[in-house]
Every structure is written in structure tokens, then in C-alpha cells.
Image (cartoon, rainbow, N blue to C red; front, side, top):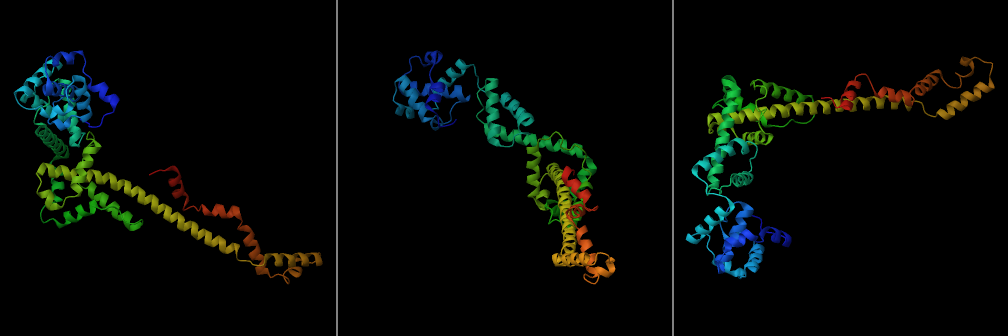
Length: 376
């Protein structure tokens, strides 16, 4: 139970109503105060407190004022013993609850294993789910909650392994177990490779990831192996497996070992596929960037080839005006050489329109289209 309460929440949740006063009856002193606090605690949390420290001090002070008993007297109230048991029986009867039985515990273990543990891995949340279910069933939570949760988690893991082994089949299980077999250095090397992320962008990294993907596919994992498995559960098994060495796998029970390897390979197969797409896109971008820089260098060289254009044009204009009836070869070539005139023509063609058009070279267009559409 939370320990910090606002004044409004204390009044709303801890106030004694008509039926509560009937239960208090003629109780006095610490017994009166303790009974009221345990009663309201059970109403709010669906269980009895295990220690007086669980009950918020704000609630102790508030109820102490209501029942006219000093708040300091609460420490004199014992949560164990004959009086406490009698009070608990009164509270159960008044609220329609009953003590849990071994049959209830077994049923709760089965429910947790089937419904909660496959989707919830945090123990505190499993505990909360158990307490909520006890309230729904109107039973007092069992005293051995930790044992119940541990049993449910073990049962859920066993069921998950059995389902995975059945789907894998004998051949696939054998291939996976060979990966960590003692003395199989190639399997150990492959396992280490599977755990590694791709290197720097380049053709070598791309080919290495393709080889890795082919190796994973070689295990023949069936389609939809973990289709009904929660993402959190698969991620947890993958996280366990990626931290293990071959010797760690061999120390694990065979069913769990095969399931760990299957979870690792299945997760890495999807991750490697995504990494390949990312590598391919990055590689295409790299090729595009190089092609654009090459075109820019070529066109920039053409643009800067002819210098002093203003002076050349002045000479041409002067010669054309001075000898308007002369043919080009006789009037202009002596002033500006034929080669210079050809360079001027080449520079004029390398205008902005040509520059932009050449940036989209035929070999780069598919890559740009790939990036623009987001196709993988």
C-alpha cells in the first residue's frame, strides 16, 4: 500500500461508514484503533497487513481522531495472536471473503501460468495481478505468495519450452543443439557472429550480413514459430541467450537450451534482415554521394576552363564591328584562337539546366527512387 496520501484521499478512503461502526461495537483503546485500521486496510488492499509499518501514518492519525483513541496507542495492537485472528474472522465475514485453501493456491498457480506470466515478466506486477484476482474471487490472498509466483513462472516456462520444441521438430532441434555442442568450434564461432552487429557501411559488411542471414536460415526455423508469443517474452529469452556462452547453454536443460537458441536465432534473423536493408540504403547513399561529387568535379572543371571571358568577348565584338564583311575565320580567329572559341562553346553548354540534369545520372536514379519511396 502506498504511504503518501492527500488529505482528501484519506477522508475518502479511510472514513468509517455505518457498517464499519457496527463492527467496532464496544471495542476500546488500542484494540478499537487497531481493528478499524485493519478493517479499512483490507477494504482497500484486499489483504491484511503484514506489519504495522504498512499502514500509512496519515491514516493512523485520521482514524485515531475518529475513534477518540491516541494515535500512539496503535503500536500496542498486535497483528498476530488470538485477538487478531478473531478480528480477521469478523472482517472476512463482514466483507464476504474467506481464507484461501490449497485448492485455491493450485488454481491461482494455473491461472498465473496460463494468463499472466506469458505476458508479464516483472514479479511485482505478477503479484499485483494475483492480489486483484483474489479480490475478484473474494478470497484472502494466500500467505505463500512468493512460492505461488515462483511455481507459476516455472510452469509457464516449461509450457513455453514444450510448445517451442513441438513446433521446431526433431530435425531443427538437433541443428540448434549442434550449434553449442562441446568441441564444435565452428558452431561457437557462428554463435559469436550471430551476436555481433554489422560493421561500418561497405560492401564487405553487406556480404558478411548476407552470409550470417543464410547461416541462420540454414537452421530451418518454422514459419510462425513465436507468432502467439508476446514481444516482451521473446525479447527476454533473446536477452538471456545473447549473454550466454556455449558452456552456459550446455549447463541448461535441453528443452530450455533449444528454446533459448530458437529465440536467439529467430530474433536475430529479423534483426539481421533489417540491418541488411539499412546497410543497402546506406551503401546506395554512399554511391550516390560519390557519383554526385564526380559529376560536380567534371562540370566545375568545364565551367572554370576559360578565363578572362569578358576580355575575350570584347575582342570578338571589336573585331566583328571593325570587319563586318569579313568571314569568321579571317576576322575573328586571328584575335581569339579557334581552341578558345570551342572552349567558350563548351562552357556555355554547361549551364545550370545541364548541371542539374547530369546530377541525376542513369546509374544513380534507381537509388534515389529507392530512398524517396522508402522501399526496402
